[in-house]
Image: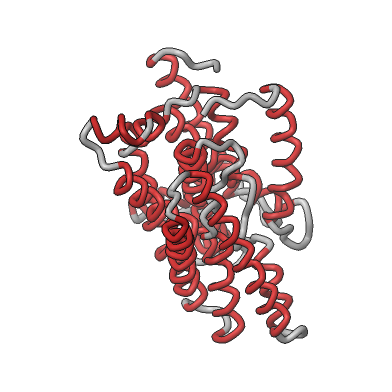
Length: 341
């Protein structure tokens, strides 16, 4: 841990926040049609103050209509996964837990894939992703309740079962899809991509991610209490069951919103909280905000890498695995397998 005092934390958080903002501006100019960062800023400010500038309509269109919604979605997707991942690992006390632990990732993925198969692209994949993401959470809840052993381990195992069930349904959708038309688009989308991101999708998903993340960040003191045990939490006047349910619903909304636009993107919600934990410790009052900023920074960099190093966008799921697996191995070796959650 390199941040131990409130003052050092504030400085550190300010630095990584400014770094993320700087990267956000720079990557808007990176691509097959490069634009200087100064001109990117001029274009952005021109829309805020209503003045024109000396640049072509094509340049403005590339920045405002193509790259800006995509980079914004990457930023908030990373923020959401960082928040969700850090909280999931904390409340389940498991270092291998990711935001999709309750099966919501596969559930939302199945819903979107089914909508693409039946209705094609449009608003329906986003709607179905929300419906089936929440349905996956409800199914995990039901299985856990039926066992009458409401422990964290049983909940995680129920989530694994639900995840495998929806993975099978995703495979069924792919089997039924037209191999010349629907199948390639479903497979490519499930591997993770922001290539189809638009302002309409941003307008639907980003507010849900942002509001849910803000609520979870504001709840970070109460989230800390969950590590004390159920009896201790109740003695402090907090109902742990209600708190847990609120957290899980907000996490589900975040993950479903991301999956509905970007497909299934793994590793970010798993690896980023561990990096943040090594920097600021396990206290959720510091961990959650830092995980959010680092998640946004990481997602932006991964998406920029995917759209620039190849003529065709490389799926995000491939890049996050290629980058995340070595990072996780390094963290595992450095920690000697001892995680402080």
